[in-house]
Image (cartoon, rainbow over all chains, first blue to last red; front, side, top):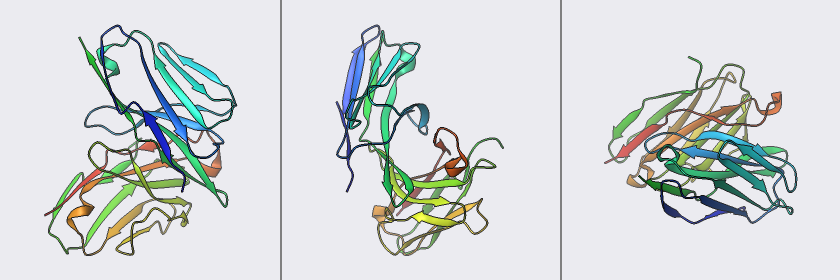
Length: 113
Length: 116
């Protein structure tokens, strides 16, 4: 079945350093979503990418969708303690017109002040 | 309320008991999802409803798990003969689904199930 993997599994950075997480799907995706889950919280939607090679920015966050639409990345510039949490990518597994979103394994980010 | 509501927030039960978890989605959201999340893991897909019908239940682990959404709004996840391995946070999410929108999933706070 469809698998979505993320690396690294964990990342500890000093506040002010950059951070990147990579997402790879075993199948081509029609779109990809990114979510952030704070410790003890629930996943919260960040963004959706649809087009091949698409790049979107949200303040210090830059999201990219690969040309083959099988991988994606999230880059955070100058991390802050508020960036702490686990970042998940999610892709739709389209089977007979349904849209179940398969979540990646996640990257847990810890920011050291 | 404005968000996805899940009850109970915490449920402790004994092995072999029956459990029901309820999800009240955002009004107007036609799509509803159930996920299961174990500690340190990503959300694991269980079932997806579009309206009243289960459009995809391929993630349900076995026949002890069943979910309904009889009127296309509130959904109930039912677990029979609970096992210790069922212990996890059960997350519900809703979206506009085929009604449009970005496909963004709005998650509830989850129901933490502990099977002793």
